[in-house]
Length: 500
Ligand code: DCT
Ligand code: MG
Image (cartoon, rainbow, N blue to C red; front, top):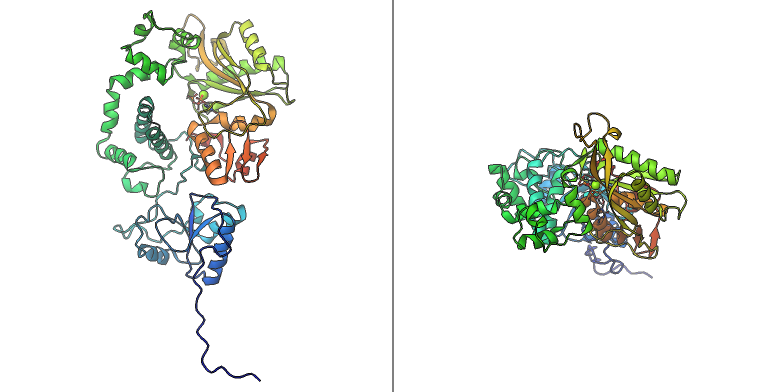
């Protein structure tokens, strides 16, 4: 017989949310720490979603702290949620992403944190009525250039010009850290949809540290940065800038010449002790032409010449203009072409034959040829600065005036009737073509961030040859750029939006 209990049952107590309800999980996305708001979501749903996210490699915090990057709430009003967040004593609410559950469910379905879009963000209804309190960010911007759309329309040129100079000067001083920081600052500002009018506009914008914000503040107040003014009047900076403008002269050689006391081109060219290499000799010889930027019309004219020459050797070859011109830049320092053949192997030795033909046509002024060192078995290299292994040629080509349309012609009135232009030809095998196209389209900052994103957010290795999944230990194949973005779980960014 069953007896009634003699003492009342203890009240059901809430289990504390275990740190690792089903054992510890590997954190795959270091940049993201999620906090799920229990209010309206309920205790059991929150526990379930927490374990689900952890099994998928997300870091989910039990408590709200300054470590949290993504706050996720369900059915909460913006006003109440923001008021609650302000009361939590967090150091900096401005960089916090406050998101609707849709961001979380989409991320669970994708298997990684999807790009935050404005439709995911929970805005407070009247963010500006309480100006003394932190408000939601004006712009939601990713720290990765490959998750931003950066066209040639730059609303913040006054700042980005300053950061470009600071980055270049840091490079000349071999200060890699500050150089990268200034390049990242310039890049993120180029992507903003409007002009920065006040430092507060930048709340929540990543890639800006104390130093870079101080530069922006000074420009906002006085129109110029004193650091930039000092650099522009610095003899060393001006000299290195002049010397590195010569084809074949890098910062190391420029520095060596500066230390020898050289300040002008005649100082270098008249010194008996200076041994110029082939590239530098050509660089000085054609300096007047190739130090001027090349127009889109000129790049397209070179394109027709290259395409005709390539097709006369392999009729079904594919020739694509890449680099800045593919990103719809109007001017560039060179024209970059990618050449491949539908039939694998047919691209071998192709560039030598193209160069021979250009020489025969009397259109070749200089050629530095690099044979392919590509080996299918090698892992993609994370370092962007390492050149790829495809066969390539760095050329100076004679571009005849009649090939360029009337107005765009640069040599108008020039008795020679031609102009020297810099051209790069790269010939990957067709199975690497999509990766090479993505890599050679740039911009450099876009490429750096694609690789950084692949490594840090996806545990994958990306370079101009291919993509490797370190978790699954497999190479992933792609026929188009769209395939590569999809493999990385990124929204497709058009070439004209890659001017990061
Ligand atoms: N690139 C690369 N690996 C490198 C260097 C560059 O894959 N080690 C890619 C990135 C950009 C692209 O090649 C073209 O390079 P550039 O011609 O230097 O740049 P650009 O964007 O075309 O700009 P510019 O107008 O100065 O030519
Ligand atoms: Mg280029």
